Amino acid sequence: MALMDRTLGKVNLRVTRNIPLNGLARLPLSWEVALPLACLVVIGLVALFAPIISPYDPNDQELTARLQTPSTAHPFGTDHVGRDVLSRVVTGSRFSLAITSVAVLISGVLGTIIGAFSGRIGGVVDEVTMRVVDVVLVFPELVVAFALASMLKPSFGTIVLAVTIFAWTPYARLARAVTLEVNTREFMEAAVALGSPPMFVLRKHVLPNIMGPILAIGFLRFGQMLITIAGLSYLGVGAQPPTPDWGAMLWEAQPYMRRVPSLTLIPGAAIFITALSVTLLGQRLISHKTHSG
Image 1: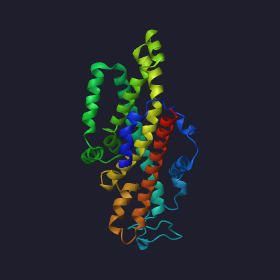
Image 2: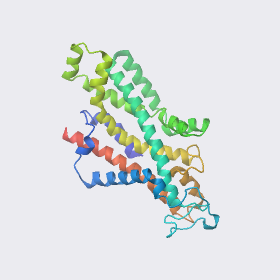
Image 3: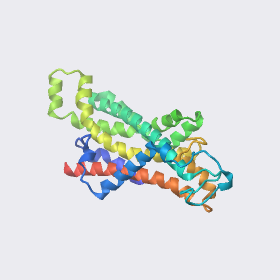
Image 4: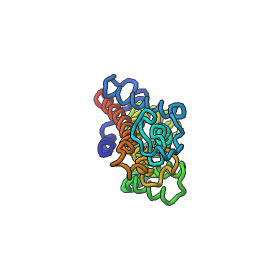
């Protein structure tokens, strides 16, 4: 978590040139890129084909087979009510990844639009917008998300709202910073001189040239958002039983950590590997473009 926070804090200073949308494909092929990318591909395929891969119904209970250690019949063991852990981890990946993807997409689009508009308009609008962003950044995202989720009826939409209500601010700060740099380029001056409408300039010239850095920070935020959503489920205000979810599985397994450690290790490893993989890719994307200039 601290690793992602430090990286996010440096993005505004380090990303001063446009990172093209296909920048990930241009990264030098090394184990630092290939390994996390392979992990994400595997995790994505598992989530996509979860109904086919799952050997059992994730909600089927068999009390006579509760708290079993990994075996041939149950490769990841069973939980406290006899449900197959492998099936719940595989199926839970769909919920965790889907809700994280939606949250990152919404917060990214909203923050990018606000930041680009602020940086392009400038003046009082820019000053007021950035002061609002500064105020919002004071509030811890997890605390705000927990408070909001606990006050509303648990649902997919509630979780998305809870984690995105303040999550747009890093995108806004980065979009505004890169927009200010784009404003100084010659093609921008030419577009204004030709009498192009402000919204046309914003849509055709500004946004395409700032999407690279936004994509890079999106990788970093995905990992942080995944941990936040898992934390909400762990605290009981995220995914509700019997919905399979990695964070909820951690909470359910907590009383049995000593007896069957795999109940906590397996969903915890799923969260850790996914978050680490997207974070490493995001860092490599930023580092590559920073050093290549």
